[in-house]
Length: 210
Image (cartoon, rainbow, N blue to C red):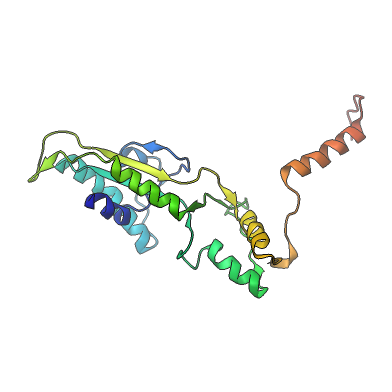
């Protein structure tokens, strides 16, 4: 139990390319998916993740320690981190400050797999309840020990713009968006308009040229 709690701090977030909610194998296999395993960490937080990635499978293999790593996905809720969007947006909305427009490095939509704190706690307790016993003692091990990696997420990434829209409704205050831009047409509505145009322009014939 102590080992898992230590890993929750030490191995709080294992760097992986996938965002699905699955059980994965040893970190040694996972780390091969990284683009550059030797990239220097950009922060102390990132450094602790990398150290945990290196040490945990070694301790499991050599000493037979039963280890479980949990990967948290955008945890939100009361007493959360004030710098996160869900926490900072309400303050800006209520003060009438513009909400920043977020986009990824390739100009795509930024989405996050928001996971409520209560669900994270349930996941932690569930991992504890299902944890196997270590097979080593006094520096010797009697066999292979349990080694698990779990993603604790919601499996439903939500665009940050949708997050702001939900907060608008809950706060009953209209948010101000940077330079007045706020998308109002979802995919269903947009395709509906497109199909109406398509049928009107092409009709039932075989018009080939625009």
